[in-house]
Image (cartoon, rainbow, N blue to C red):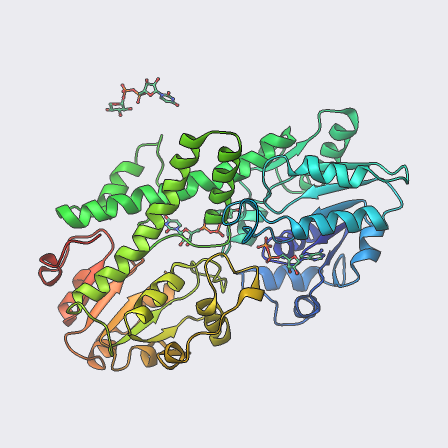
Length: 480
Ligand code: UDX
Ligand code: UDX
Ligand code: ADP
């Protein structure tokens, strides 16, 4: 029986291993993590992450050929194939601070693998890493005096949160990068056989190690670039009276461009896009490619611009101040169908509103009050470095409420901001919300989920990203 061990039971490691276990009953899969809480949660009925379809997959396999454990060393020792799926946040200090990936967790995992192994193993990079990380890992692993050989593979994960199980069951492609040596190719073949249990052969791509590492960063940069492009256009639409949904629809119908990922929004979030682009930028800079670095940096700048623009809209629409006004925030996660809040646009928007002295009341179906408090207390880039946590100022704490009910959040509010595209926000009784709000009642739709026409009929003043403005909003000071 082939044994797989995955180090890191997070958003990537957990779902990926669950699907491998589901599709490969002849393989034993053990997911290990240093966090006792995380492993306990994976072994309970309340999984540590919310992901549609994940519960069923875990229920079917757990205890059969899928196990979760904190005994990292034992399972690494026993495994034939080791996936490394630990966090690789952006460095907060030292060389490359704010851009380069922090490989501390990766390096310590590699050293531990070298220490405990007694037989040849395949080590698979699953978490996104800067190009040529495999070379460094290879050095750590293969400079052992035990005569053990490690083959390093890069097998980046392309799943998106909220659709992880579907993406894993039916991937556009699986990418496996390896050394072009006979041992390297043997390792590629071994991993290919795992995926071949359910992925058609023509969707399993093989490449050299560096191409695989770079392809992941570039894929995320291209995806984020589409959103920043359409978000840049949304500002122009608001200025001219064009409708970004109509523009994006027409543009996307060109099959060279494609229809997906052209939804204008308050800004992209998530653990990958910003981090991976910063990483790409840093690699370009290190290679003396300043123009290329600047080109990709612009994708992040437009994203920051879009978040600021949204806050400015809210404030300027409401008579240039939100001080002492109650703003309801619907949705805090970085996208629907996940409880993940890493780098969510909601953090910047809420901080902006609190900075203007608003009182905010937040509702998200999957995010806890504790999580929101922590997110708002963190500085940029601190998500994976909780050491730097600064408590929210007492004044801000007083101005922040988290509720478990959208109607409660909106009660007596002056304005409502929709920041995540949860399906349930389309079904809300907006007449009821309007009746319980202060007048004039504003709604700022950062995800274009509601029908502005219907809401205007109720009496709301409506702002939607990139759509023709209400007369009310038209003659406000220029947005920048
Ligand atoms: C373009 C648009 O494609 C077309 O829809 C519009 O109506 C007019 O402008 P055109 O300029 O004729 O058409 O050619 P296009 O195929 O778009 O190529 C433009 C340039 O991009 C060419 O120099 C082409 O060589 C280059 N190109 C295109 C690349 O360098 N790489 C590519 O992958 C595609
Ligand atoms: C992304 C990549 O899609 C995935 O392939 C990679 O493995 C990890 O990073 P993820 O961050 O989970 O996945 O979510 P994604 O669906 O890409 O959304 C990222 C952000 O972009 C979200 O905040 C989302 O709301 C936003 N977005 C997405 C838009 O604003 N508009 C769109 O059209 C699409
Ligand atoms: P991702 O979104 O990439 O999956 P997460 O932060 O959700 O990232 O998951 C990474 C996991 O890796 C965390 O649960 C963390 O505790 C775990 N981890 C980090 N370093 C190690 C290590 N040396 N050994 C085992 N687990 C580790």
